[in-house]
Picture 1 (cartoon, rainbow, N blue to C red):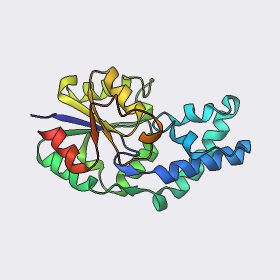
Picture 2: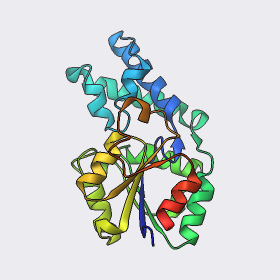
Picture 3: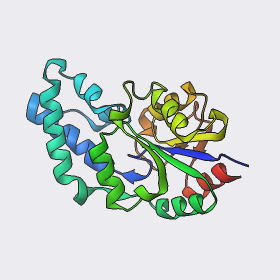
Length: 212
């Protein structure tokens, strides 16, 4: 019963990078462009590839913005990122229950691994898809489609767990059910509650959705 395969977004879903991401964007826009961009505006773009978000403000300087963001973000990463309450226990229980897990993130592989290894949770995932692994990215369904192929899974057997509209649309485009977690800060600014198949407020509820 439930879903044999669970695909997880990373930022805002498993690990709390919200403060780090917001600060990194604000620092980058201020340093490179002299812009004070509101957190509300930044939150609307949570979940999409970094270079796309940065390009909204200055396409011709996107590479400079990207470099500035990455340097700041990586420098502060380990001192700023935390894991959400109950995630370690959730992953333990899912694997013990025979569920097969995957990471599907729009984050660069190097930095995504930093977060996974910081909390020793890489070991739970049979498949790990990062930005470099597909040509098309969330909200395009390509990342979820590739994850299903690598897992040998049918869409009906899987669920995508994420915190943003980009996760929801990506999964639905691949005919995969979705669970929107409410412990992130992104959902309140993206209007995606209605389109998700499940709304999740805590890890116990998420466990029950996946397994029962």
